[in-house]
Image 1 (spheres, helix red, strand yellow):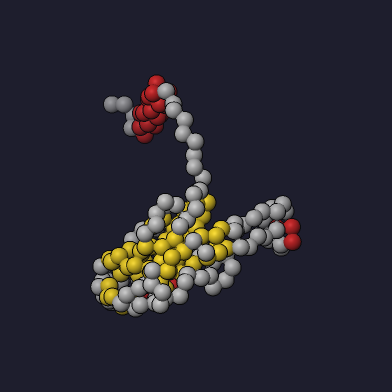
Image 2: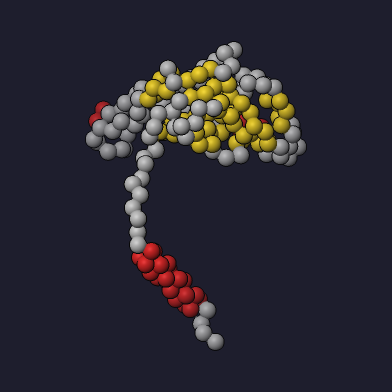
Amino acid sequence: YVRFASVYKDFRTSRSSLPHWGIALIERVSIPLQQIDPDLPVPAYAYVGDAANLRATCDDILKPFERKLVPCGIAVAIPSGYAGFVLPRSGLAIKHGVSLVSTRLIDSNYRGEIQAILVNLDPQSEFAIKRGDRIAQLVVMRVPTPRSTCARSCRIRSAARAVRQQRRESLNLILPPT
């Protein structure tokens, strides 16, 4: 098990401008982790509260405007009620023009290897991905499950009608009738 975060902060002892009542900023979550590539270090935090660094498992070259799926060498078992988010590293973006195509969502039932979709946004330079490079970050957050309620279709239709009527009225204000 890898313990991703284990810090609680009480604002009563803080000099910040946040509320005076105590809030747990970071929740303690234990996440089972399988190291698919045992030669790479396990994702860890540089500082308490940071995101965990994900590393490339292979060498590769990203040509300008090219994108590639890069494996990170780990699989995690995120608990129900949580989700993992693979986020870009700002240092790669500012120094090399390399980012992620999108934030990847890792659902709590996904058990495969975590991978990052890298893209080279630099119009001229290639980017060399080296095995062990920190290429992305993993953040695990609580994701509330909404209760679904069934609304009557007539209520939905009447709400849609009201929106259309507001649009017509606003267009009439902009474009006077001819």
